[in-house]
Image (cartoon, rainbow, N blue to C red; front, side):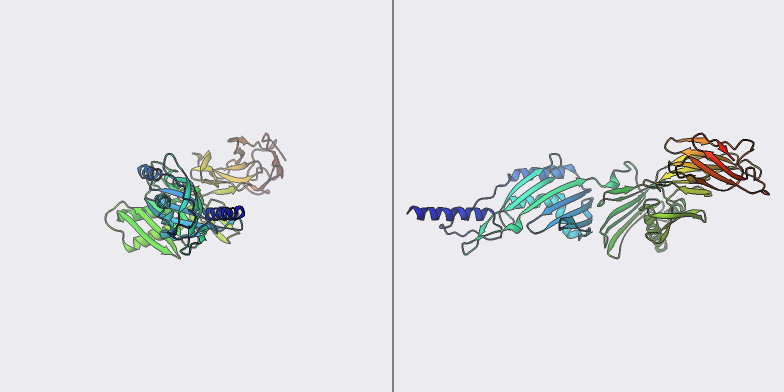
Length: 467
């Protein structure tokens, strides 16, 4: 009798533990002979209602959201760009053998199930027992927004109609969410763009946008990759775009190109709708502008040259020639990239400037002289020091060399060798490997500016030189 009671007890205990791990939809039979299965442990529904109310009161309709969800047999990362309450772009990644896959486009209709509002409604439904199976649930809500930061939902066991326990593991899930403001809304607060180009989905699963402002600044942002870039709009392309704005008041058009959804919004300065020709011109300009302003200056460039008043770079990796993203004024007189390829010095009608490759920001090194002379950037050494030559306005003038130390933001004027009137023209310059000495080769005899023929060595520490 004792053994029999023990056997019944062990059977019931085993049934209990099986039910605690169980997962699969079914109804509970009315037979009173079956053990009672554990009931779900969930937060009060009032907590979900409170979170939903907090989220609605926040008025947050534009945001970037990441949702990492792990079920019994799958782990995915969903990235959403929500703009004005609608899913504008979405990516999905899947963890395979411990590593995330490359992002792929996620259909916007399916992705809408992962907005904050949709997640809150889903969790409340599961907590109320309205889902496929009963769930025990732990939820950590954001105190200010009501966002469900962490969710751990465990599916409960249920009985089959035959009275056997079924496990429902595929209905269990763990969820972690992260939310941020859209990059396009935080970089330039208070500024209103007149041009907005957004791209979503397609083979590359894009989540990017390009905004242009009337002061010729631009903002390119990719929310899914959490990267942003601000550059000046090229003067000639900006003027071509502005020329089109006088003929209409607003353009809002969406196109699909190779699976990528592209929306173009342009605020004009005229009345009525743009002509078909104007629309086509603006779309062509938008493609060009997006190419120029979404790629850091100098990225991948291994060879640079000047042609037709433009700085061009040969990108050997892509096997393409691209113009530098600089805002030049008038005649371009010279350009030089530093050793680390993170600074580009160039000279035009405004003087000599250095532009940072990664950000597109520039700083003035020398203002344009009033006497008609101009500066030319020659060559950088490995200390971020730039040899600069001031070219006289006419024949017979004096050529002047100086070294501009970028990190110290100061210049060092070079002194010609003893007994020499000035440096004059030269046929080339080069730095020593350690950056401490500079070699200058002068023109041969017979030239009108052969003030310093032969070879001159300059000490970069104090600017002195010797033949």
